[in-house]
Structure formats: structure tokens, C-alpha cells
Length: 291
Image (cartoon, rainbow, N blue to C red; front, top):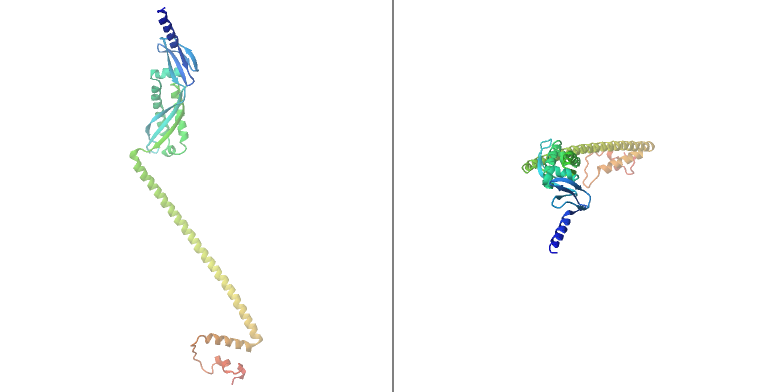
């Protein structure tokens, strides 16, 4: 009886070691002496031969890999330091095992780094730095992803996405680049001020011209109105003179007196027989009554 208990325990342990579980987050390979004998991609309970076969598990979820920063030289020779990452997934665990061997995920990511770095250099080196720094770089990231898909497929891996996290200038080029950017902005500002001054001069010249034209037109119209008024006045005076010449002469004399004798100290040097005093010397204001 005492020999039966160890046998039962060994049997139970052997049965437990023969059973393994694959959950929905992973895929598994059953290896026998290093050779793949079975691929388990569906979740569930499986059996293997104890001590002879072993199970290797691989993550079936989408994985992320940060690519070490690399320096690239675009078409305009403006060096940039690019920091990127990729998302990938193991699609064929059998091929993945054959490609990376016992190295697993770590070996695969090392090879993915080489593939993505080479493709990033090729794609970003074929465009200008402005294209890389602009909002259109989504198309460049898609080109990098599409270019790396074929090589990654040979590893049993599907590259889902490639993203550029950061694009910076090398530290030694920052000062020179900032100075160049500052000079460009100052030149643009000078050009804008020059264009503004030119536009202001045109506006002022146009305004001065408009003022001259308006004043000239107003003066012309004023002269026309004044001339018409003078003509009307002369016509009235002429008509009045024709009706009563004596009254008209009297009115003109009074107007002359009013203009000549203004102020408190008006002085006039005239001959007493001057016609200017005809109405002053006449007691009734009549020229005909004067001696």
C-alpha cells in the first residue's frame, strides 16, 4: 500500500504536467526536441506529452516598440533627430519561431528596429525637412509602415502602425537654426513694414489729391455762385438806377459816407468843393438845391 501512494502522486503529477491552458491573449507552440509539432491559436485546454514536449507561449495582443532616436538628413541637408515607435502583432507563431528561434520577442524587436530604422531613413531622406515638420507627415508615416510590412511579414509579424513621436534639430544646430529663423522673421517684418509704408504713402497721396480736387471744385462753385450773385446784384442796381437815378446816387453816396467815416478818429483831406460832400452841404439832401 505504501508503494501505491507514490505511484498515484507521480501519475497525478504526470497528468497535470500533460495539461496546459491557452487563453485568449496568447498563442502557443508545442515543441518536441526543439521541433514544432503543434500550433495552438484558439483558447482552451490542451494536452502534451510530459517530459518530451514543451509549450512556448507568445503574446497575441498588439505590442508597442519604441525605436531608438536616429539622425536623418532630408533633401535640404537640414539634419533632424527623429524619435518614433511602432505597433505590431505576431500573426504566424510558427514562422515567428523559425525566424527568431529561442530569442523570442526581444530578438524580433531587435530585427524590427533595424527594418524600421532603415525604412525611416529611406523615406524621410527623400523629402524636405518642411514636409517632415508639416501636418502632411501622416502620409510619410504610412510610407514607412508600408515599406516595412514585407520584411516584417518574413518574421511572422504584422506592422500595424508607425508614428513619429518627436522631430527635433540636433543640439549643435539649434543656435544656428534659431539665428537663421530670427533673421528670416526680421526680413519678413522689414518687408511687411516697407509694404505698409508704401501703401500708406499711396493712401495719403490719394487723400491729398482728393482734398485738392474737392477744394478746387468748391472754390469753382463758390466763384460761380458769387459771380451769379454779383451779376444779379448789378442787375438790380442797374434796374433801380434806371427807375430813379437821383435816389440811386443818394444811396451810393450814403454807402460811401458809411465806409469812409468809420471809427472815432476818421480823418479825410478833401477840397470843400469836392462832389463827395454834395449831400452833406445840401440842407435838404438834394443836389439840385446846392449853389
